[in-house]
Image (cartoon, rainbow, N blue to C red):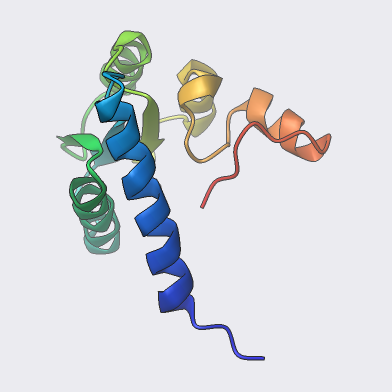
Length: 138
């Protein structure tokens, strides 16, 4: 049997769109995704652009943060801490790769596990390995 990925993707998008609309109907907060992109890697820019476009199509708020390649590690960590506290942000995606001068483990240690959309924080990795994933990354 041949699986048509476009049909499956459309079904998933249709379901998510309905769920987001239902949240709005019940006066619940609109889901929000913050994306942090450091530098100007062309492939990363395309990927992030697709995420922002998908959010728009699904009715999800997007909060893109494009930072220069030379942004300091502390500036990135401060942004993550701020987004962790922002009630409009329900998920955070830090686009890889990050600049070489930034310690990715510090990013994972700073990112709140409940907002970790890639499931890469130590807590989420542990839950996944124990067979109890909180959520499944794409």
